[in-house]
Amino acid sequence: MADTSKPLLIKRYASRRLYNTETSDYVTLEDIAGFVRTGREVQIIDLKTGDDLTRQFLLQIVADHESKGESVLPVDVLTDLVRSYATGMQSVMPQFLAASFGMLRDSQTKVVEKLAALPNPMAAVPGFEALRKQQEAFLKTMLGGMPGWSGSGPAPEEAAAPAAPADDLAEIKAQLAELQKKLSKL
Image (cartoon, rainbow, N blue to C red; front, side):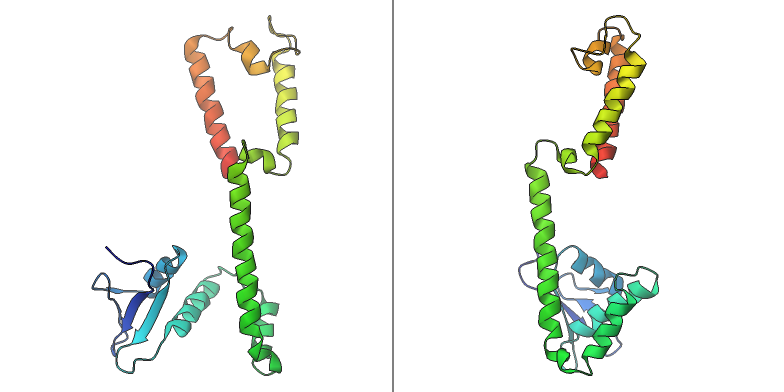
């Protein structure tokens, strides 16, 4: 079992091949990107010199994704980064970027925690209440002429349930559950 509390050690051989020391196999740059995406820290060491190459490989991963059209860094940010190397900002930039990304991670964590704490996470989505009211109005219009439902009293789905056969009701419930799943993914 791998110890995920320590960085995954990747050795770069003179042939430029990358070797995963935990699994004893060769890996690609895309494999390393996958490790990082899953939250695993990596450390890439040149086997011959012992130099830490982690920074240059992570930059290569970013450059590869940017060149494939998966742009994350706007041109003005890249320009500012290049300019920071020629000014006194060079010493401040790493701390600024680290703090900014730290705040972003913390914010994402807090949002996820707040959504998980809600009885209905969809209720926090902007416009959800308006969508729910539109659905209610639609059902009221559609079911308003049905016997046993006057538009007041029980919710439309409760009023329509006795009139529907058991098979139809099960199908409607399945469709409703599927729609709720799709809405929760949004």
